[in-house]
Each structure stands twice: as structure tokens, then as C-alpha cells.
Length: 137
Image (cartoon, rainbow, N blue to C red; front, top):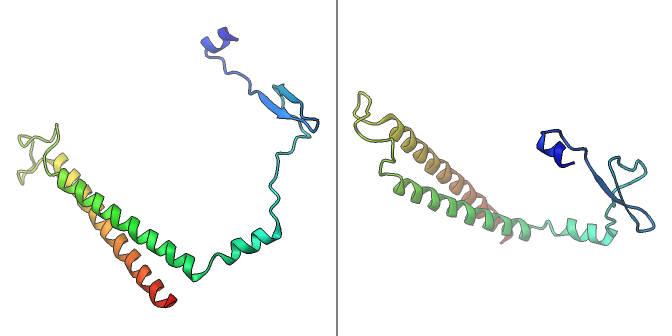
């Protein structure tokens, strides 16, 4: 087996299965009678899960969403501020006709777009949150 692995020969898959009697079988071929275990959920649990989709839970989701959007906006702004300094390879001696290094300019544009996208996302999440607050009052 070690020679096969060293020679780059792919190994066969190995299946570990538990039968009805509790015995473990290890084989290179899957047992065709094997059925993976399925979860049985009582009907009451399903009803409870469906009932939890109330305005209160959607309001909570809107709060979480707005908080996450605000956090990501702050992170994008922080990254933009920290990205003002040129990185290695973005030295000023390699510039375009406007006197700006193209690599530096592309990175700044990407940081700016990330902040703009985060601002739109934050505004959208805030609008949804305020709409949920009005509905649940």
C-alpha cells in the first residue's frame, strides 16, 4: 500500500458501515442495502418551528442584519484609511500620464468600491429595520 501511495497510484475508497446488529464492516465496496440514518421530527416540533416565523423573529433578524451591515461598513472604511499608504510595488516612480501608479490606483478604486457597496448595504438594512419596527409597533 505504501508503494502505491508513493508511486502516485490512487487508492480505492474505503467504506465503514454499521449494520443492524451493530457490527462494523470495512470494505472497498459500499453495501447496497445500507440506508443512511434519517431524522424523524415530531409534528409538534415542525409546528413550533413554523410558528416561530413571527414578526418578532423577522424584526430580530433585521436588527442582526443592520448590525452586521454597520460592522462591515466600519471595517471597509478602516481598510480604506489603512490602505492610503502605497504598498511595495506601488512606488511613485512607476506612474501613468496623470502621475499616479496604476497598481496603487486600482487598489484605491477597489477600496472605494468596497466602502460604497458597504454603505449601500448598510442603508438597505437600516431601511428594512425601520420598516420592521413600524410594522411591529
